Length: 378
Image (tube, rainbow, N blue to C red; front, side, top):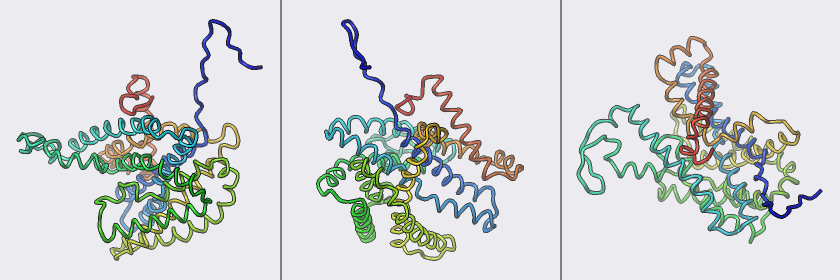
């Protein structure tokens, strides 16, 4: 029976429903990020160099190097779908940019303060200048040029570059969607185009070094931008045909993943690696795996009720991403490391404690109504 609005009543649109598929994909993505960072830390803190455990943790860390491209692909797909429904670029930017810039700037400031706590040198009172005015103050804040570079390249802490790349991905996305609508390429054509353009960027970077920090620039992630734009613009077609992509993508993953791990083996053994081969193979490996994560998420959400834990993680993925390095840093204090070592379960216990603390903090922020202040949502 249709809803009828009678005199005196106001028609209210139902709240927009979240797509569980993308929350599940984000949930998988944040677990991959946590694993990528935790395995690296655990290899350093809870294993003996070149032991079996050390090798296993380092291998797992390298294998999970595709975690950030997963998030970038998901963001590109979701935003491209929005652009297909409403091609107006102005409203697109006005809606999405504040959602990225606000938490980015807030957490950049928080991590500057965290660095002052961690590093005594950054607290030293030194002479400097702020916009040409001579001042004395903490080294962290009187070196204004360095802080501006932190903001521009996402260098306030090791993980903040992702927010800069995400901003740039969304900045370029209307162009990518326009290309997809004009050219109407197939899935494989857009994938090959993305990899070819990425190769060109790598060659130009090699000879010109035009990007001081390539990993902090969207042009280093064209393997997420262009396929994400295509999938978002052809969402129903992708859902219909995605099973056909699984085996070819898996073959590419095995080949390029093997090449990437071979170069990483050289890095660990202090042997000069081939940067073209390392970066090129990682681009293809990460992009193909990111697409498969989307396919896997689709499969998980086919049955109602499946993937609820992943969905919960996905809904809180931004909060987890921004907070978890601070908790990791706290858990690296010598006394805490010594206590965790007593359990002989450091590689498992440390990330579990970290995730529990993060969820506890998220809950506290919601209860105190401060989540929106820190994350721009809540």
